[in-house]
Length: 162
Image 1: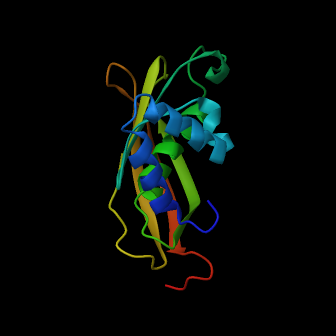
Image 2: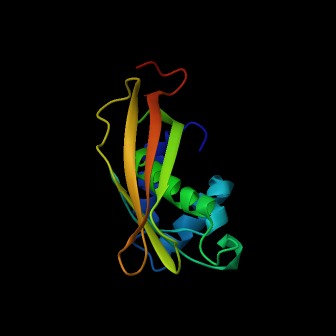
Image 3: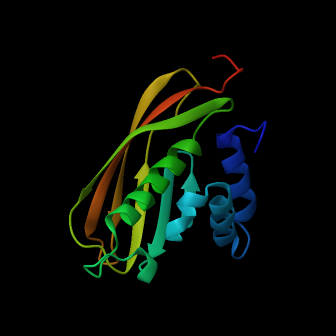
C-alpha cells in the first residue's frame, strides 16, 4: 500500500473483489493480512461503501469469555473494524485518519452471529479535523448487544499538504 492512499485503495479492492463469487470473503482475508490484529475475530466484510460498512462474525470458542458469550474485547474489535472501514473507505486521496479515542457500551451478552454496522458522513477534503463515528452491534434477533463511538483525527498524509 506504500504510495497509495487508504481510501482509494480500499474502494478499488472492494470494487474488484466484491463482485466475484467469494470475493467479499477474500477481501476480508486480505484485509486481515494488512491489519493482522483486526483479523483475530475472523470478521467478514459484507457491505462496504463510502460512509457505510457492515461486518459480521460468528461466535466460536476463541472469542468467548468465561460466561459463554463473546468476549468484550472481541466485540470492541468488531465495532472498531466497522467504524474504521466506514471512514477509511470514505477518505479522499492523500488523507489519513488516526484513531484517537474509542468507547463501547455493552447492552447484553453477545452470542451467535453478530453484525456490526456504521454509517457516517463522507469527508469532503483532507483538512485536519476530528471525526466522531457511531456504530451498533446486533445479534441474529436484531437486538443491540453493544454501541460504539470512535474518534478519529483526519488530516493530510505526511508530505502532501492540505
